[in-house]
Length: 230
Image (cartoon, rainbow, N blue to C red; front, top):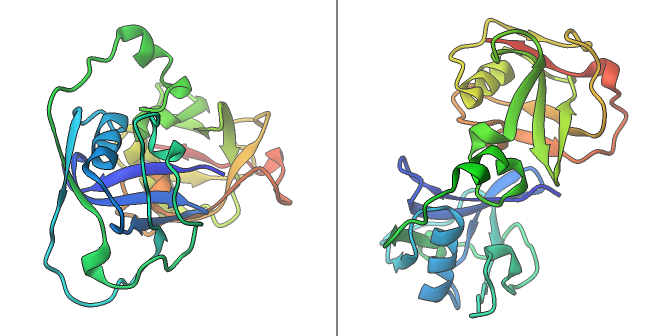
């Protein structure tokens, strides 16, 4: 199962804490949340070595998913995913005041050039580094592949349309989409088919922001690999 972490704000280093799980972004509830946990989040996102939990005065109920609660990171934990928590639950908390908001600060670790080149093997890859196109020219057209669980895999063309292609091109840093292609237009890939039933609305910043079915299981075959021209 692909999982990701983000702070929902324009700078990516402050805002509402969200996790991507089971194809959906959801909030993290603040019960038992300590500053040490906030610092681990900030370090993992490359946003500094310190984090503070912000108090946000919001009223009302959470309209979307709230995946986690009672997250307790200890000194032995170096990643948010190592921290114990209550079981995954779509409604771990119900009111907006319980959502975790974090602001990062402090010294940001320098990323060695070698790590950038091998980013798919690290825990701090950007969305742009988790997608590529293969078989086309110029790095902005070809079969769409995404990095997950230590391997590149393809995207199924079921429901693949211009809205999905627009988001893929944006994530690639290639501007707008010219066409959304299916039926392995740039040749069949190999290995897993990581994403199926991608349903983007168009304005999302990456495919991970869209409604999507993750995993290598399903009826899709490589003759149905999705592609783009950007």
